[in-house]
Length: 397
Ligand SMILES: Cc1ncc(COP(=O)(O)O)c(C=O)c1O
Image (cartoon, rainbow, N blue to C red):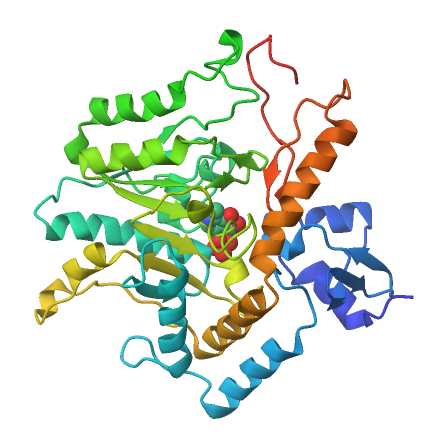
């Protein structure tokens, strides 16, 4: 028995617009969407009382699980004290504490500055603008291009969309922000470059170098990458890959932005995927697990040496960027309570341990099955490939 009123059902038919979702399917098929009304731990319940295990954790988001009263109480307490504090003019108390906390756990270093946003796309948007502004500040105004990877996903606002590598998401919204360039993923299982050679020759790394040389290193502002790439299907950066990109960035004066919107806060084990892989980015973008979805929030965590370019007594040198709800006090309070839970219960380490256990058990159980080509993932982040298959005929589908 549905708990939706007639008015709610009508609103679903007429007014609700889900994201990346064809609403017309609901009316054409008469399907009733699953309306989730309750959550506890890793389990959610729909409007009919049916329960499900939420294997996707919302959208790679609810890292501490549903029903955490202490986060709800922290949010309520902040809203009662003061609901809104403008980040254009004033810090809120949770914003101060959260910035310090994020700096203390980030591989960008404890002196990092933290620009809080309201989600992942605007964290990426912030990082891209910051990279361009940083170079302009240093007299390198020509550095405006950004290298991302094919198949990558960095969000849907115009800047973030432009660096996305998912063609179907990008096309249809042009002209996009100029300057985005795309390199191949280090996707060893269906590698277009190395599959025929039986071993990785790091051609995907060479491609980054070649593109930089082709474009002119003095025109490249930043490289942006996810440690474990989601939209290609949990594609884990191979050992040494991110280090090689870091080295290329250093050699050419390019900023390395690591997009940890999914990978951060325990999703792949540890606080950040980049740290797990032994790499120190210039800017980390994060969101999702920062509050475990209890409130919307994102952040660009910026290495001190980069942020310092904007910090002076000259008003003309400030970072000309702001978001009304960026670092909302209630969201920052949620993040602090959430990070406290992750820390107290050792959940980021648990993700690493369970991930290691899961991948070895999966490989042992089904790894040699003729229908299984590869078992991959890291921490609590496993996936399958959607979309185009390799054109390489020798590579198994
Ligand atoms: C790696 C990555 N970057 C950015 C985003 C965009 O975040 P949001 O949807 O919060 O704008 C996402 C969203 O899934 C993501 O996975």
